[in-house]
Length: 573
Ligand SMILES: NC(=O)c1ccc[n+]([C@@H]2O[C@H](COP(=O)([O-])OP(=O)(O)OC[C@H]3O[C@@H](n4cnc5c(N)ncnc54)[C@H](O)[C@@H]3O)[C@@H](O)[C@H]2O)c1
Ligand SMILES: O=C(O)C[C@H](O)C(=O)O
Ligand SMILES: [Mn+2]
Image (cartoon, rainbow, N blue to C red; front, side):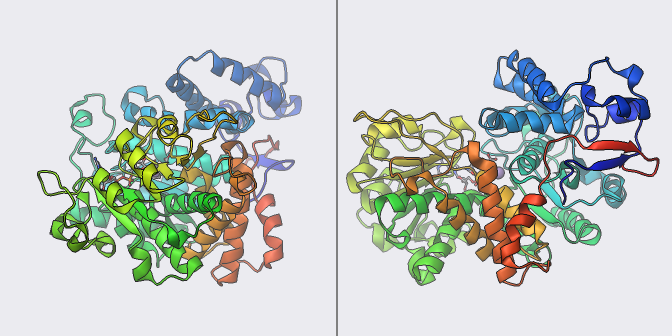
């Protein structure tokens, strides 16, 4: 990784070739000299613009698009044309435009992928083409120093489920966030969709669907396909980071466990979500002046993210509060579709939830529904949770009755509705704020406006507890140190650094996490903490002292600034 700013790049493309390459295209910013050398003088209007001027023009054009999805489509086109302008523009309006290119708007772009389709971006590895997988892979990667692969099989996109080939849209968005917030050179990352079919009937019926129109491949054939892909990465890019995104609940954790010892792999929904939630909770307990191990934590939705959060918080109780693991497990109450995760549910409960199953004896006398399940409200009444985390995809699940009940049992209810996009949040923070008389300490997965303080005084800013506040830094810290793996301690170090940047630390009425306006600086700090920990643990493959890490992190970041170009037939293309 190196910054291209104020550098001369030797480029082999000329004429239409360079104008249609988003990596090298500068549009009206090619200098007079470059226009001559690259055959562009007659292909461009006379005026040479600065990047600043180009950003102004692009922003004006963007503002004529009225809906978020139209803005999203406009920005996608811009990315297809000119990376520096795209990243330059978004960097100048970070907080306004991240929700357009990422959560929540990108969910609509993904759901409508086949209809909005104009031009492909990223790599498509399809089950039916697996015989040529290596050839197809090398076609796009050969000779390229790719340091980051972001892949998805699109079975559980955000909270909107199986999106088939449209899932490429989450990997391209996550990659763009890596560039924006951790300075990953976009030419050194690749978004990959692993198209193993889809069980989404709407997509299968749609004659404009552009993916492989086949039911999802599962079992041994699926595992072999995924393995073929991972082995290609290990063979051709042994030092890269492999980021898994939005896999289904039966594969996410399993694949992470299989590959963790072979390669630097990272599952964002498990580890990224776990880390950002740990940071938000550390910040909240700073406000309530209590310990992590004092909390009674209710996790609603025990899928990939719910279990990732549970494990991360549990591990932090063990590591930071010196609690025995078996005692830490008891601080958690998990609820899924079948109510509280308790003993008598038997095989309904996934094997990986075993540690958190509550004994039936504990629930004697507690009312159940007609299926014998203990529902959320009853759990809240009995447990009096101090923390309630939602990862269920069930919008509105934290009802008025549930939230008011929680507020009876604890002075400052800590409520994190993490499901995305916005309409799937377990509670609208505005409502939870009213129902708790302004006492709730909140953080949400998608952005929400500040809440009015019922007692008067300043508005309450709802922190955005989205893994984007931390995963770019976690990944970059591992990448830049060429860490053999991304260890649990590296992740906790990143979460602690994030928590240390919380506004609530100095003012308890402020947000639990830093604002997305500062997300680049925040992720830089996270990357430093992660890299220092990698060096400390002996996992890094660079000869740096810890004191040198910050400088390497900053100087290794790609910036959206035009480099100067010289023509070289053997140069970059
Ligand atoms: N804020 C973040 O950074 C972040 C990160 C990852 C995931 N998420 C969000 O969390 C949600 C879940 O994602 P995931 O990857 O864990 O999906 P998942 O499918 O693995 O998990 C969802 C779980 O919720 C359960 N569930 C569904 N309906 C329920 C109901 N009515 N009551 C109780 N449980 C129910 C499912 O059975 C499943 O176990 C999504 O909306 C996703 O966008 C947010
Ligand atoms: O993509 C996001 O916004 C966060 C998270 O990874 C999710 O799946 O919801
Ligand atoms: Mn995700």
